[in-house]
Image (cartoon, rainbow, N blue to C red; front, side, top):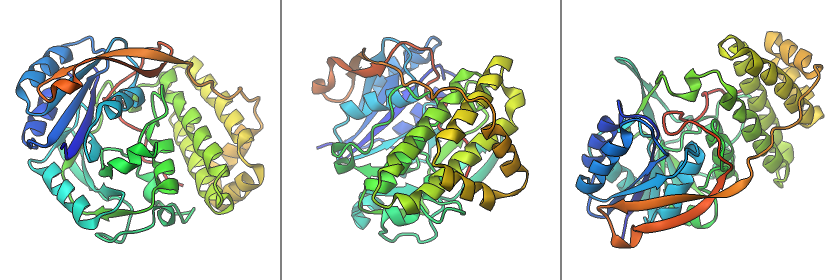
Length: 370
């Protein structure tokens, strides 16, 4: 039986993929599988992955016939995963040797639905340790309790999917897939749903993921329209949280975090293309008007200062309609590799209409809390 499935999307990361693949080899075990999802790369990445499929123990190479983005690439890997436990890695990041073995041992020892871990942020030669914002370590906790308080950084503000490990029962309950077609902030609805609906989790101090910042192809470095997907992502957070039995308690946190994200992007509006900057303002105005207004008023009063003034002014602008989700359409993938023959062949999985997006290098969303 496969103990651990690791989903690793790649898109045009030929400069960094060798480090990623070398670190996977240093984590290989006979009962681990590595699902390498090539999101239709156009550089030298496919050749690197073809070699890895032959030489990396447990590797399964999956190819998208068109670029679909990080969320859909992760979902493709999840659909092929066979492990008792699952985790993620991005194609431009890397691991410490033996990290996954230690992570699996910790998960089995604690026996909870999922674990969250710390990570090392890498920018050039600089290294910085980022701690998961869960004060109690090595103790099984209720995930819902880790969403609040609204005015502090909590576990839902640390959305990185690769900073943890997840039991297969979460996949079977529909809690591990990402919103198809989101090109940024795909981790925000994901982490909120996980904390609302999973039954148990823990945080540990294991350091083993090295997260590369400042990659030129990352969406956090590109000021184009794909960045605006954070609005659709957090609209989903608000919509789903509003249906929760404890919505009165949880919505203030969701609204405050949404406001913080809008403020973050508006504060960096100079890096956007002019038309995208206009869209950002109009779509943010629409988002503010769609939020529960009483909750929003309380959030702005609590925030105070220049951010609150800016957001109130923005709410008075002419709003844009909510962003439309991409139409689902089948995306063909081919599967090959050095793992099981049962993983070979051709499969189809839901995916959005064809839009050129970023893949693994466009990891997640800014680490912004309320």
